[in-house]
Image (cartoon, rainbow, N blue to C red; front, side):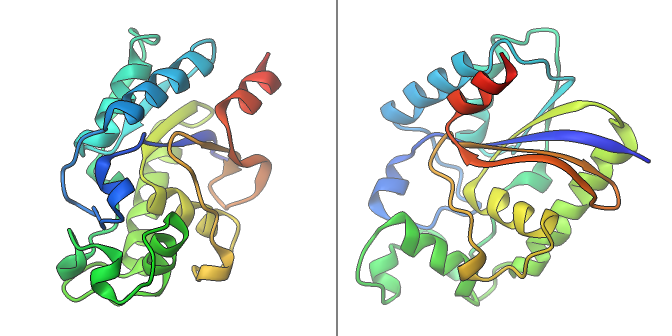
Length: 209
């Protein structure tokens, strides 16, 4: 029975996170705080063992992954387009307030992720299909391995919904702050052996110590 350990990490903060802008496939960079938080994340997990590090191929995730990779120079690294954030189509690059919301909070952004039918964008089910293909790759090529996945908030939330057998709706959201992590030990038939969800990296580090 193929089994893997997956540690999901959301990238650090970007200016568009602050501005309440839907980034999706837009290729944005981390701001100063985002870079500093990515550095702190890398210090938290520098003593972990990872057999492979996957990262979304978008810059904000790669910048975070590259901070981590400095502590794992001999670990396999893969840029993976399947880990891109959801494509928001015509809503991409727009502020939440431009789309009728009253505030720019992260919770509101998460609500839009779950509830929008973005013109010319991906559905959540299409994103989950991408996540399934990524996980199949992990089971087929990295059986028994420890895998770090540096990606985006939407991907982490929808991946956890899929892993836990939850309907991908707003009430089942599992919000992730920038650079927070989730851990699962799981088989290819979605039998869950262990998990820690939506935690600061220090909590995972303390458990690994």
